[in-house]
Structures are given as structure tokens and as C-alpha cells.
Image (cartoon, rainbow, N blue to C red; front, side, top):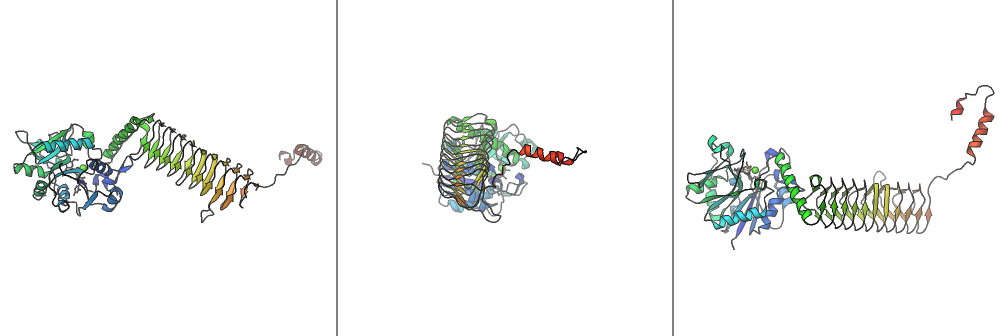
Length: 475
Ligand code: UD1
Ligand code: CA
């Protein structure tokens, strides 16, 4: 077994992103860009995984960290060559292969690196570079070969002669070499270039001059090795990653009616036979069960959805949990910490926040439920509001099993409605309701029998003798 160390370069700021956020933290399909090469590197099971960090290193470590990653700090960003050089003390005594990858190349696949590594190990090369042929190589380092076709140097676009600029084989920024040689040659690189930086690609010309064999392994998939330098590149990576994610779900038995308008983040799981309609967005760490139907325009964020759940059109579900056989929407809004138990029904224009709806309970129309615990088999009538906020503090509402809340009820919290109680429609409930009681809290109705004939008689007796255009007639 060869031993392997992987170094991921992620110290650069990413000036071309024009952002306050360091480049490698810009998300692609819901994860920071750096998370993808980290995943790829992990899949190769290296003996050491080093990430070189600089700009916003604390945030990078927080968002992309994990037990097996060793973060090495490059204090000043003096170039990609220096970025590798600073890892030397952390690889003391390591004599295996070092693979170098970039944190801003999220689309790279494990298979590609695996092949590249195998190609390096099978050869007698001291150093291998992954290259690709581009129709438009503008901006990239060019692979310069000597008369016999051997790789002689990498010249950055800005340092290239007009003739070198015509070279279409470019450096992907992915390299591997044997550790002792790599660190020895790194010590010799200088800053004699347009940016006065220590260029990592300069190890190629140094190795060549020392008579070492350097090879460029050409890959045919440019899309995969493309680095992200600006927001145009970012949107392209997003599109490619999204297509990969959707393909993976479809192959696993999920129907996606319109992949062009469906957005599913990398961390999402979806069960077999679930059907996803157009314009749906499933983000973060959401998990969707089997046999669910997600109708158009739904947004689901960091939520857990059970099996056989129907999420109807235009519903927004955020940090909530929905159990099996429930139905949500259309136009429902579940805000963080909402729990819908099995068979729960939440209908149109219902907003629920930090609340629990028990088994088989329903809130079907035009309702706000906040900071509320609702038992099983409860019916919440149309237009019910839990008045949970007194202007300063939030207060809880408890509605026990089998309660029937009539339409247009206001429940002024803190308040508790006991098991099986009934609330008359239009009530304002300010006091606890005991189990089994009927509570009605509304203005008493006054009924005037025969109202129209009384009114008519009154008009006749009030009539002025000659003028019949009294303004009162209009009332
Ligand atoms: C680099 C290569 C270029 C190649 C291209 C492929 C150099 C000098 N050039 O150019 O030959 O064609 O990638 O995409 O390497 N970094 C640090 N510390 C630093 C400087 C850079 O960690 O001090 C990291 C960056 O975060 C990035 C990587 O090194 O992950 C490459 O740096 P970047 O500035 O993106 O180089 P490119 O101009 O893209
Ligand atoms: Ca780059």
C-alpha cells in the first residue's frame, strides 16, 4: 500500500468574487465550495488530509472542519507555492505521495483523482500534473513542452510570451509528487514573475532542470477541473452540481417532473417513489420520505418529512418536522420548530410557528398557531388565532386531545383548553377551559323580530305631511 497525503489549497481570498466572504465559503448547491474537494479527498482515504487556510480561517475551519482534517495556517498569501511549503513541518517523516488539490475546484470527481494518482504511480515521474486541452485557454497556466514533447514548464498566462499564449494545454492546478522531492524542490522557487508570488507550478521547470521526469496527465473533462474564480463560474458550477444531484435522486427512484426548475441541495435525502413537481426548492439538511408528493413552488428548508406526505403548492416549510400521512398546504407556512404528527392536516393560509399539531389534528384554513401544543384529533376552525404575544413576551397555548375550536376564535395566551372541550365560533378565550366544557366568549346576539315591518311603520308615522324626500329615507 502506498501512503498518501492530500493538501487542499484554500488560503486565497478570491478577489475576483468581489465579496466579503472568502471564495471557498461561497455555497454550491447548499454547501461551501470547499466541502466538495474535501469530500473527494476523504473518499481517497488519505493518511493525512491537510487544508491550507488563510483568509477567514476561523470561519473556514468552523464550516468545513472535521476530525480528520489538519488545518495549516498560511499567514501571508505569498502564492500557491508558499501555501504548499508551509505544510512541510506537518508532514515530517512522511515519505509517500502528496496530492495537491485546490479548494476552488468543487466539481472534481473521486474517479478522476484516483486515475490521476494511479497514472502517477505507474509512471516513473517525480511529478505529475493534471492537464486539459482548452479551446480558450485564457487566464490559465500553459503546459510548455520541449522539442521531444516532455513537460518542461508551466507558464502563467500573465507571464507567457505571445507564442506560449497559443498553447491550449493548461494546468488544472492538481498535482502529485513524492513528498521528499516535492519539499526539496519547493525551497528553490522564487518570486520572479508578474505577481511577485511563489508559484507552485514553478516546481515543474525546476524538476525538469534537475533532469527529473515530469508528466502531464491529460483529462478530457474540463467541466470537472474548472476552478471557480468569479460569480459567473460559481453559477456554472451550481448548475452542474444541481444536475448531478437530480440525476442521483432520479436513479434512486425519485420522479422529478422538471429537472430544469427543481433545486435540491447536496445534503438532502429523498425516499423512493416520491414525486417532485416543478419549481420546487429543497434545501439544507432536509430529508423527505417515500411516496411523498411535493407540488409546485414548494420550499423546504432543513426539515424532515415522513412517508406518504403531500406538500401542496406554494408551501414554505422551514426547520420543521412532518410525520407520515400528513398533508400541508396549499399556501401553508411552517416556521421553525413546528411538529406535525402523523396524519395531521394543515390547509391554506395557515401559519404555524414553534408548535406541535397532534395525530390526526387539523388546521385547515386561515389560521395562526404560535407557541402552541395541540393534542390528537383536534379541530382548529377557520380563522383561529393564538394570540401568543403581548408586546413583550411570547406565551404558550395548550389545546388538549379532541378539542373542537370553532371558527374565528382568538385564544389569548397563556391559556389551556382541556380534553374534549368545545369553543364556540367567534370566541375570545382568555381563561382556561376545563375538559369537556363548552366555552363561548363573544358578544350576545340581539335579534329584533319582524325588523322590516317595524321599520316601515316607523317611517310612515315619521313622514312629514308634504315633503317626501327626507334624508332619513336613505338610512
Ligand atoms: C492557478 C495556477 C494556474 C492554473 C490554475 C487552474 C498558480 C500560480 N497558477 O491559477 O497555473 O492554470 O490555478 O485553475 O498556482 N492559494 C493559497 N495561498 C496563496 C495563493 C493561492 O492557498 O498564497 C490557493 C488558492 O486559494 C487557490 C489555489 O491556491 O485554491 C490557486 O490559486 P489561484 O489564485 O486561484 O490561482 P489561479 O490564478 O487560478
Ligand atoms: Ca483558481
